[in-house]
Length: 284
Image (cartoon, rainbow, N blue to C red; front, top):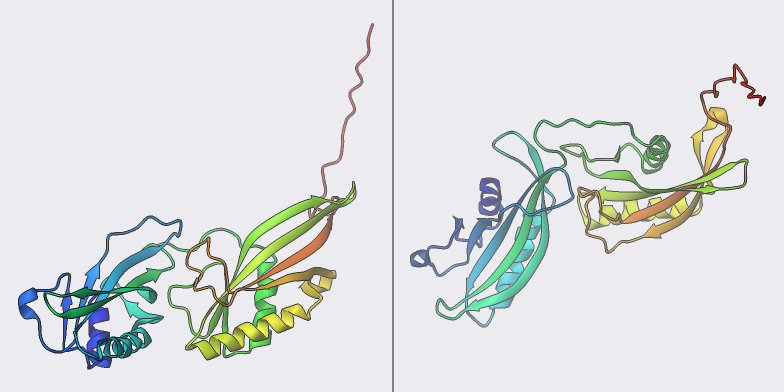
């Protein structure tokens, strides 16, 4: 919360005073003030560190009160949303503005109050390192995206790092299905979701448009060119209205795609053990 206060003081000079935790009524001044309130931790299926706060912006009632609040809100959002902060324990966090609650009026203090919901999030709990094996189709998708977007973009897989370098893209496997195709094998279909963090909406839109256009025009993705293994690209889904950032495992990305490949039931990398003995049962 201290970092939020410092950023507001540095970049939003219209705010005259900033309070932490509560608003002391005896300290009301003529100019706009802000109150930062830490919220109790909420339950979530996202595994990581999340600290929620609200930012209250107070202005005196006047003919231009809404316009004044709009200007301050816009400046605060520009400074805080997607900002990288570091906690006292040295953990890097991304600050997200999640919502703006409807203004309320305090007639006794002749003030209009606007509340913004903020969340400071880190992709993993303190000290926890990544574990497990990533989906084998994920790496080819990451390499393809990296080649397409160029060196300016960073492309990650499965989880965001503690401090992602913007502009950046995250691919995550979100669903998988296996469908038998006779006795010869099965069809494997995997869905992947993409999340984008950029410096601004224009850069985010550029990345989203380029990815979606090239995925839609790509028939197959090379999984292992040396072994002539390819996956069919289909069902490219755009969800530009999504505000999800990919920190929650249930998040739907701004872009989705399905990769499909027919696999032979006998194409296991390790051969099945040979039958060494046949036992015959006889009846007397």
